[in-house]
Image 1 (cartoon, rainbow, N blue to C red):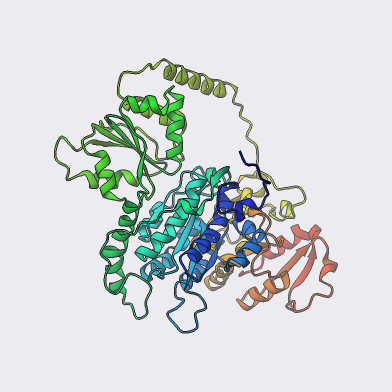
Image 2: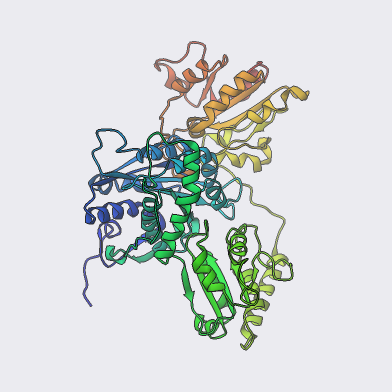
Length: 598
């Protein structure tokens, strides 16, 4: 065995062998490898990355900045988007390189990143950009961060359906190795098909670490035997809307399916000598299914001998039909295991519909063949739930005693947990020293509307009298829809400075036009605290924010600070703005509550 020095730079520098990295670092490495592969193809390309952070991609921007020297040497430009849809629009622009004179590179490969709420708000940009198309030597990878169990979100999320609505093919990796492999294939598929490619990012993958192969020669790209139109599928000038739609539906999406088929991205990961029951998995479920089998006391070899075979789908939408039809043909039953809502399951029924009787298996998933609930579409499917479903479908002929012991143990553990459960619930609270520990308090007789940010916790703190929230950028706007129909005449609205920069300033403009009375509390701390303490992109000072909201028509503006002397020499502060000590917060809020307007 040859030994060599292992360094922290291996994750980005090595181009052969293996290296340790986290899921986030794998995303950082991806554009470096794309540039390296392009150089091997004789292409002088560059990369462009933009988007907006949010768990599980909360630290992606920080890791990119930490890797700045690698970005620079590989011609990769990173711009932190002011919000997700503007970031996507900039990535859309990267594919327009070469349509006009002056291009310095053969193409720009793009990366967009964002959490599920950002995916939702970016729908219009996605649809326009995907319809317009990727460039021949560019391609776009849209990294979509999902929080299935709502660990750090205001709603659970599953973004594959948003991608399907935007008609963007989406890849769902099961591991960090998949992230590296699917990411590179995603760009190649984008270049071949002319469509963007989505890449799902889950916390279980992004927050984990693994030793993975970084050999660039592991890739063997196969160009599909697929008839492309003479004028191609890529970004062009003077493209009509209906022609974009025709090309997307009739050419680009089938081309993406052809790419998956030719490169065998969908494949059997657990073979059986004589398959009787098929299991179809994607993403995280491709790992979980083996853990569930182990819980039943079955090794993969044991399961295979019993006639159970597992087929892994790389691209859950649009489902590649030929490979999965060949896998399912002639089986007794096929069970689709996918977390959250059924995406593959419904497509699979359509794919298998025309098979002859006797060759068409029963398709099960969220419900079994008798119509009874089988696998949950809420949160993530737990290992015990998955194991229970597998136990119902595994062909007979195995010792179930270990499985029964497992379920007995799980049942007793659950009963013990219920027995020991107390009524005490830990109340969320602010970090020590956070100024918003006090600034989210409202006077007696008032209430506040919550916003997106760590101050969202005020919803769950009884003394804050804060309830109801909105999407990011809609803070306070729900009040517009009701103030005129209630005797309540005022509300406070919490709005973080990061959200103000992202999209909240427009909500203030809307409030001013409405005639409602409300007080926006712009919670300024010069850091986006939820995602690692990054500086707000626009970098506004309180004086600049005051100028902006005054220009929007806000007449009463005050600054509350623990040290009013800080503002003694501040320039460009609007004349009417008054400065108050934090100790006067109660009196100031009462005054603002009684002031009409915004």
